[in-house]
Image (cartoon, rainbow, N blue to C red; front, side, top):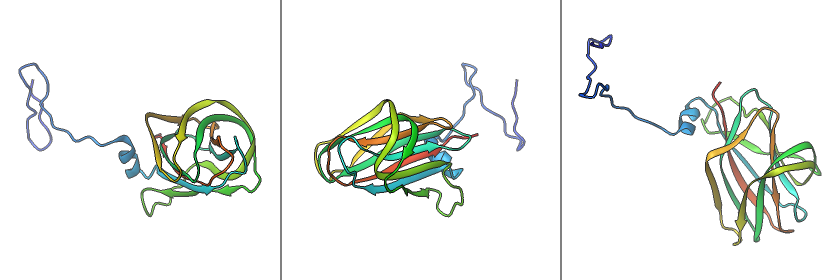
Length: 179
């Protein structure tokens, strides 16, 4: 059997009956960035007390969202907990995060509620997904998980700080799934 392309070239087949091909692969998030579906969600906040939720992200779109990585720095030692939550958030001074599409110039927006506050209440933890021990002040940590944090339509995550003091600066990388 011979396979011939539209340009007249014939595909090579090896001794084991396999096609001889060359390919280039790119990471999934880079591919999705070409589709304008990768976002940086940035905020800086100083939660009021220990165990306060300070960041809330809820998927309001039709497609799944993925958190691929989280870069975080705190001004004083603490643990930070990334949790699956339910409930209706109640804010002291609700502030929308700065959301930037990583395909610069794109008009596509993140289909999500992404807010931060000094103390978000009204949420119930459904479990800790990850935690980050921030033992040194002003040291940036990066959580990267190849499995990602999958956020289906209507679901939410929130971040909670363990210690009572310190400013938190964070960038959350969020990807919208392909349709």
